[in-house]
Image (cartoon, rainbow, N blue to C red):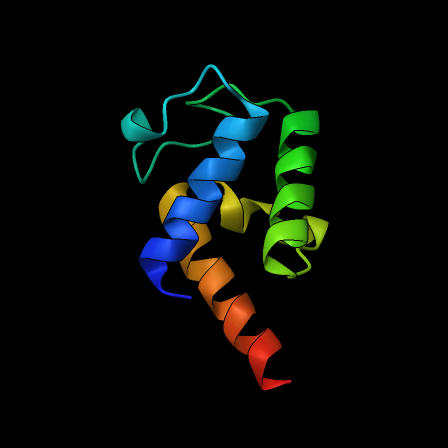
Length: 86
């Protein structure tokens, strides 16, 4: 997957969990809890949705790596690459 595809997927799942958000207004560095007001259950639902959609495991210790779009694109890209190698 390209970074653009990962970004689109992340934003689609984010908006599915928090439908009051507009994907076009979410900035690359907006924090999902601090800036976008997701609670811990929303974060867990996002992790589950990303796992289902991308087939990658996101351990709880790595949740900070998906806290912004920019971080998530990088992290998920690495996880997808690792998954495809092995």
